[in-house]
Length: 419
Image 1: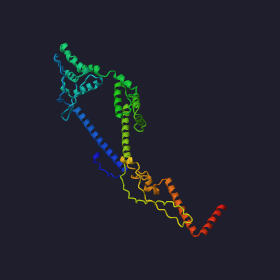
Image 2: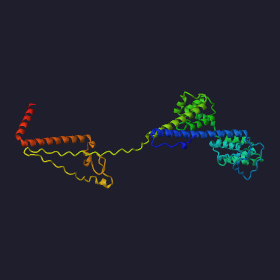
Image 3: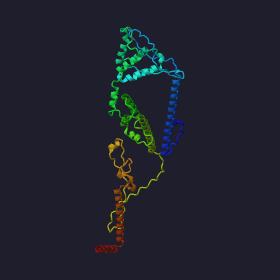
Image 4: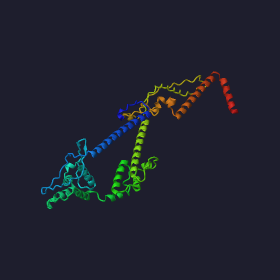
């Protein structure tokens, strides 16, 4: 099985679709690699568990942790010959080193976790606890604050006033007293009440978090597995996931088994997240900017020549109308001097280039840079110039042959009148 690091890198110049498939293949390879590692760990765990069950032996345990410091006025408690019944775990001859429990201050919400941690430690290291009084004293050594410390003090001082007889004769008796004083109260009633509200619903949490809380509530409420428990699980599950599970064609879970619904919800959630990752990778690949390609340089277009100023028609006596000369381009005025001093250049609104304004822009005669109104004005100017040229030519003809010109003018006037 190849890991994600063994996949050969692809050419970065590939198209977006190939890049998306490459990323998807990488993610799939990594998931397969992690799944293989998880399978190996589980197989190893099962082998170790089977080996422990078949070859369990007593080994020397590690230090069980700090011991309770008894007051000066206390006496040693008598040892009992009944040790705590448990088996030790051996893995390949190496001793286990279980983590000791955390200190307990008497808070009810932490009482169950504390006593369970103590029971687990003693079951893994039975040789460190030769009798039940050692088990009781070891648990008391971790009860260091609040109500827990007061119970430990009372328990250790009890033999002084009762002829050396310990307060608890067996660990089971001490554990029952611990449960009565430090476990949460009305656990079953509170769990059953919670199922009647929406506080246990999944909401914005993940499916795994919702399932963990649901299983804890079901155990505390002592609800039997059946249609009622399945209904409560479906009621609190995300509606989108619940609908997908309920509409499954193959492998739909039974409405009488809540574990089947839990497994199906986890499977649907995993498939949904995998599909979201795939869609996200494809979207990123499609929206990635394409590599820039240099276009061949386009030849600069020549600006159209500026239209000549409109000539004034010459009098009939003048032979020709002198052509007017266009003035050289003037120097642009220093407009918005305060803006220039502030460092902001003047930007032409026509060509978007700095250094001049629109009316002095050289692109004003470029038809591709003109607006619709400017093109209309420019065409009308050209037509006016054409009319002026024709008028000048007519005046010249009249100066050469005034009689023919007068006859032609009279003829045109008559035609206009007849019309």
